[in-house]
Length: 457
Ligand code: ARG
Image (cartoon, rainbow, N blue to C red; front, side, top):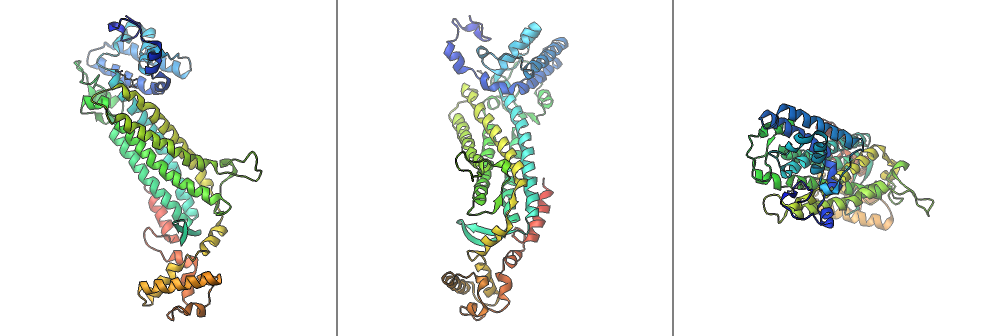
């Protein structure tokens, strides 16, 4: 026999390397608070149904609180030979309170214990992440409102397309995050069921009260099937799916911030505190924060693939493979939380360089569609109008003139329906103001969209 908690049936100690290879305490110690919370709920329930005495329950709860205090004071010694967070805590409890500590694991398995711990951990993490997401979304709405009248070029294919307002562009980011937030809430709602009581895989012979532990732990209800409860980690996959999509959105925004801070665009300034310099080029100010967020998207995508691959061939019910769920999940949580924090801090500090944006919007014939729409309103079929404007643009390219810089006579070479009032639609202000419907870029629509969005946060 060995000194392990499961050593009864073994005739030699675990190989020293295998002990280290199979241990998870090096990372799952992070579940200590959830593990203790779950054990307190379990002991409370066992006393209520008469499996533990009230005195045993009280000893266990006091003991677990003592263990938690030790861990939080940095006085706890984690032991690799005790394998994981669960057995480390149980051993410390028994050392503190004696025989009652050995009764805690009655009617429970590490399989339902760890499933409970991860769900509790992820629920806490989701609440923190939701708070940061909210802070970022609020910052975007504030900035969009300030920039509702700021005109910039809108792009397709990264070529100047039509003028838009900067506020409108920021609200596009907001909408992406709004859907991400919905996915996060869905994930939380689906994971919030208690696996505790599933025990190893089949349930337990003790007269347990699963509804009671579910309620004590803030779950909506107990899970339905014990085999499923101990084996699936789809809630972690779902979280990582949310995380990957969110990071994809942050990465796209990051890419734009990087472009916009370049000398070639010059659309915005990021305050120095979000940038770093170069050790060789004295003039440099690099947008490191958005670059890193863009880069960290790769590792979060990797975690999603790790978890999907981890689950894909596992037969029911629990397999040790599942121990590999934690590092990807923890890192996805940490990365998403930090990226959101960086963005939420940075967005309100963006300074727009309105003159540069305006000048850029004037280049590239961004009001060409407005001229075509003008001709249509005067009775020209759209395809003919497209042709007329195409020729005007070709003329502008040859002569170096924007449409709004041509004289009426020059424009009339291409269509005699063009009159003096054409210049109202060829201005950037006229162009954006004309797109005045829900979802359009008109400044009034941007302000109205901000007001509607505020009520959803
Ligand atoms: N450390 C394990 C994990 O993370 C806990 C469950 C172990 N259960 C078992 N029967 N080996 O999954």
